Amino acid sequence: MALTKAQTVAALAEKVGVSKKQASEMLDALADLAYKEAKNGFTVPGIGKLVVVNRKARLGRNPKTGETIQIPAKKALKFRVAKVAKEACL
Image (tube, rainbow, N blue to C red; front, side, top):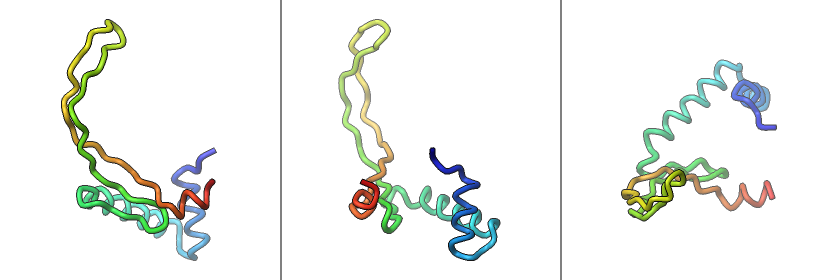
């Protein structure tokens, strides 16, 4: 089962030796920084990288009617997991 934000904050606070409030503020600051810098590529060392990718226009199908529709090109946010993280988890 995945950790909740409160469990993550508590674990970080205990590991680093800071208060839960400080750990929560650091986690929030990291998230805010990631949102602002994602368009330039934001790397969390040892975990991965947030990148913006351009998706091409393509043909799709409406599952309800079976009708073919045109899906426009768009930008999407993608997270690329670091090799170190993959090796540690698998």
